[in-house]
Length: 136
Image (cartoon, rainbow, N blue to C red; front, side, top):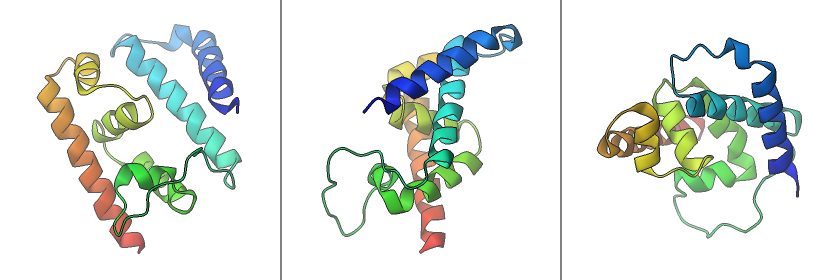
């Protein structure tokens, strides 16, 4: 499927159109990732019935957060929780899961240590898991 390419193209087009609004308070890569994330969430809202997994998940008694993100039933709940998550948890989790960045790369984007990125990611996971429990 060309969904990822379409979302990426849309994100770069939006970035090009709004480059004048980039104020430089953050790394441009963070700004671009935010635009891409917003395009992705817009796509999800428009296509609620679609799932975005190509491979079946292994069945577990208690699926982890990453597996829930790819579950059709839980994906909208996860994205709603993620959307309402405080920064930097929201951004770090998104960069790690959707951007597939390493903790070292995330730390570099934020000007923090690799340990900070790892701890922040795991705290975000825990917050998401706790909020998912409220849905059950």
